Image 1 (cartoon, rainbow, N blue to C red):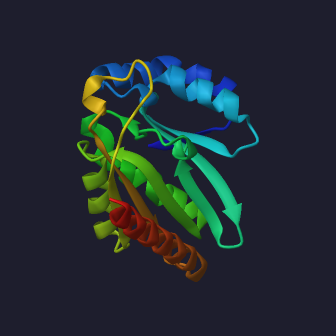
Image 2 (tube, rainbow, N blue to C red; image 1 turned 90 degrees about the vertical axis):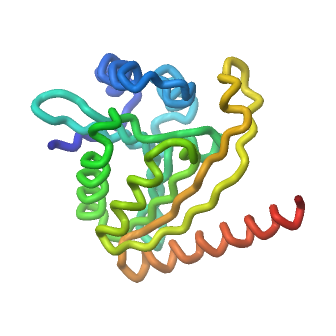
Length: 202
């Protein structure tokens, strides 16, 4: 497998058919995974916001997309889903049969390249299978995770009714460098404080 970095939305347009074909094969009902939504969001964000979409190529065909946004600080790198600040549902775009191996391939490559990195992935649907596949990967790599599940209420137009009562998960994990683990622990603490506040409010 080969990892292809897409770092402009014009470059993303080259892969539109591949993106649409994967979603069609999965019978996708999540509007936030649609190509048009991600492309439009990237246009609005601009190309200075660290959007990095990774495509996975195997036998000269694209089999997956990982729509990330990169931030860098003293602790190293942090990778989010592109829609993190929008509060939307996001996920890996891959056929179910390919998801386990592309997760292993992509995260292994990113960790090798970035060294000190924290992953903070927001908006994974609890009803999906990406969370369990990520957990299996982290167990295999002896990496700890923090996850939190919240109710998800969407007020957007044209959103399927079955999304109105959905639940989403945020999962946070990091490489084992001191800097990455320190920042990971800071994020974990913030999440625990937020969860405690939400429980008190309810």
